[in-house]
Image (cartoon, rainbow, N blue to C red; front, top):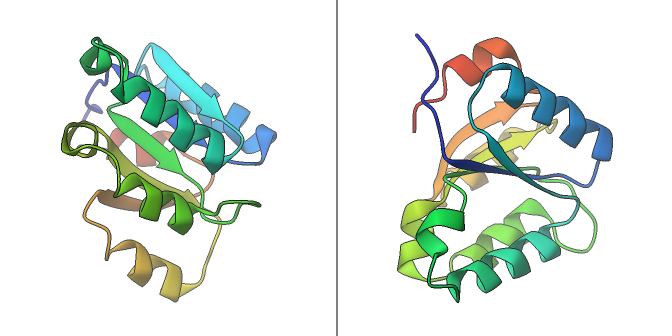
Length: 135
């Protein structure tokens, strides 16, 4: 099954190498042409807040956000708490995939409590995991 195509994807991970690897995997799978990359959840949430204010928000908001859990300053769950405060339009547009190296089952259970988290994947992205994304 071929992966669905998305207009825009956002990667949020404090590890720049992980971001680079995941970006290359997304590009190789032709999942999207537009990738926003953030090395912190704080900058990513600010970016989304700013995008909401634009008249062209429909065109610039990411369809999919790949979110790491373990990050300094603001972790993935804190990002999700802030994401819940965004507009309904943003929450409807942006689907979140937790992309993490965490093997803690509590993280997976906790992620399931957020309605916008559609998938929970282990890092790094693989060709197979990308092909199975259909959200």
